[in-house]
Length: 114
Image (tube, rainbow, N blue to C red):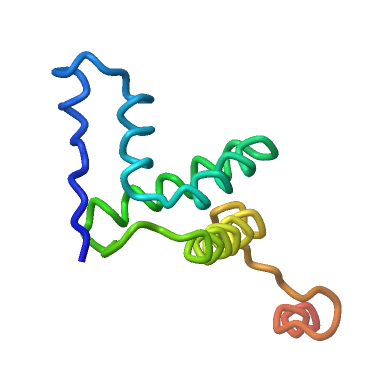
């Protein structure tokens, strides 16, 4: 069982390293080289997707849900989950959409006959 020591957000300022360097260090600790390479290739195509996956992996590590370095296969699963989540949000725009049937009989039409 591998335990990860993740830098908190206050440590980078005390160590004179940038948040980007701290993030890179964290990812190097929790990703196998193949998984890191895959994120790098994804970043070339769509940076926002790579950032979303990195955020998810870092969150999993900080909450203690990772017990070993993330493999390329596990990263593919995370990509699928992030992709599904993004599709759901884009379909609804992050809000509830109500579509009502138009035409046919409507209860309000009965009131017009009075």
